[in-house]
Length: 87
Length: 87
Image 1 (tube, chains in turn purple, cyan):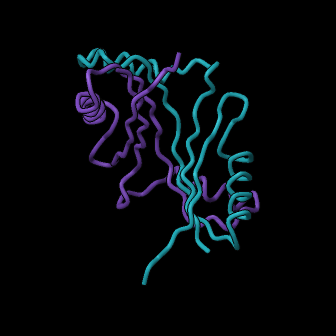
Image 2: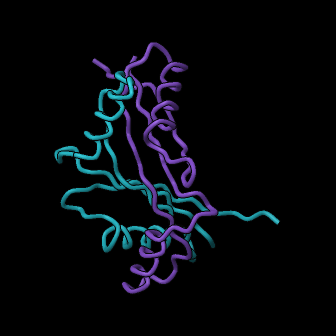
């Protein structure tokens, strides 16, 4: 079975987010004042092959914990769905 | 009204994604071979104040087009929701 995982990796709430601050400032300079808060993270899309949803999930968790996410300063959320190719 | 926009900015399908390639390689080196494709982009969270959903949407569009997205090499998707603080 083929799966797709859409992962968001974001700086923890307690952590300063200089990129988000810079974007907020930039938007203000463009005249967009109504944006009150900005946080910037990464979005990662994985296509994977797995026997079932449980093993797909464990692959995604492994990938996040071992490579994609620095859990000292970041948190992650994702959704995982079966990727269906209709013929 | 307060709104929250969750924006994903991704490299266009036609564009090479060296970061995605590097992640795929890294996962392979860690023994995670079942990931077939990786794409890496940005995730941006905006909190904003607007009179209604239509004007919130136009603020998000403006922010994407003027600052957040390089539309020559990237595309963006987002969802926009009212942010309700219950008392």
